[in-house]
Image (cartoon, rainbow, N blue to C red; front, side, top):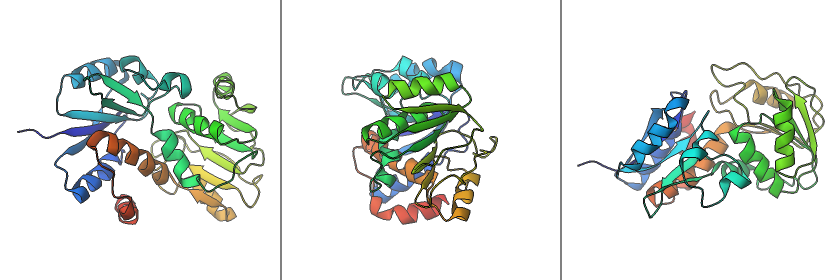
Length: 269
């Protein structure tokens, strides 16, 4: 007898902490199910979804680099995520058996900064990929001030600002950042195995918050620099656990025990 399962897909995928998070919650709630890692190369993405659609035990998947935008081509989009965010990080099986894409990154990003007043405040975002799309979507709902995006492809960054109705500037990576209330690294730079993120945080005011979506390593160079400045920080586990909690409920029909977050963080760290 087989048991239901969900998984996380990406390329690479060995670094993912999602199986630890979902496994912890499944055990805590006594749910007989599994959560796995599965490497999927870009050219195999369509075949992957076609195969999982035929597997009755498959409850869905989380999606990480580099598939968050490409996956939209292979699943349904009843919530209009393509038009609003333009990237998905979660796929589930609908009541009719068809695969549905959604995005829990925006909610996961927002949760740790829910108490931060960002109305009219300047923000810096580094990166313009799938995670950046979810973050910019969330920022567009918060009434932020000017948004500066640093990205290799400046035209892509400028297009993202326009698509989310945000005022600001698109600058090449390595440019000096302006003073800002919030700085978010939404790129893979600084992740284990990736190039370092070279950003000078000296222009930031004392009340700035530095948020790094990278969680491997947990103490990135960006966060270390922020700590040296005495700035408030949000690490990648905050967003990772937040988006995972929303996905977990979609996969397994139960809310995860968030009162045990400290225990989970200790396990992840």
